[in-house]
Image (cartoon, rainbow, N blue to C red; front, side, top):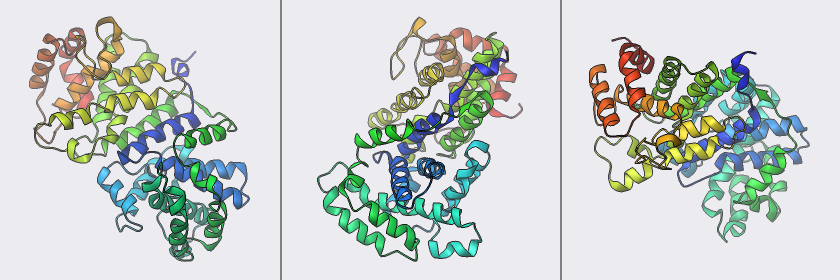
Length: 413
């Protein structure tokens, strides 16, 4: 049996869990994508759409902001009804999804989800794409108006104002037919209360149980992981290609260590996804050209735990979740966030840790330039001697330094 078949998971559940990563970009505003998806589905039901179309709208809502990595861009999107720079993230999201066949049907909806209704006819799109993308836009704008009130006693009080505000854009921003469906769907209190935690999770759970699983193997799982690594790495100019470099190097080190093919594949995916939680870190911390304060460092140290919380919910990725989440753990137990040590850290997790540090040292960062191979190795040795990295994995990298450098950087010496 082909070793790649050992990794299988449900694409629908993977998309659902990974949408959690997109929600982290809001830092303090969670569940935006989920709320947009739920609202779009409720409006779609009023329109009499079939189950397949409702599922498409839910997925489009979950992933509509996959082109957003920056907290600064997110602030614009949630604080302004119409922002001139909005189309850039639509185009980026479209490019990411178009490259992955199972999610490609979502790409046009993402591309046009900030295009005004009165501008769509000039684009010569089919009626379905116009309608569905505009419905995502409508739900997205409703959520920006409602977001300050979720979890507050004021939510139901302000729903009338939100509905009135949206109604003013009928025929320009939003299709009259969609506006009518929204006003109908949102006329009851339950529409709004379902959007609040913990009710939103229960509502989505109810929807999920009626959806047929869509199993994917390693090749497609790797493609999906690649998409999310691009989202994470785009957060800062200093982290472009970081996850890809970590994945390449981790797989190489796994091969050099004699691990089976299936483990090498899982290492590659863990490398691509290890920094998912970093989407929650504000841009100004990631790009700070000086030493972080204790408060800023505490914010940074959340990210590997967030990665674990996202990945652990994907069936079949249990090992990958641990390896990825342990990339800041250390053999001496002084890492974070779980303080695992010694035999509690599997070899694969130790490999990810070394690959992460190696690639980061070999890449330009806001506080220093990229280091040459010899200096990278010197830092790795020091960290291994202090008990912060696995000495045997560092020795393996030392014996194959040139090859490891190329894997981590995609370049030549």
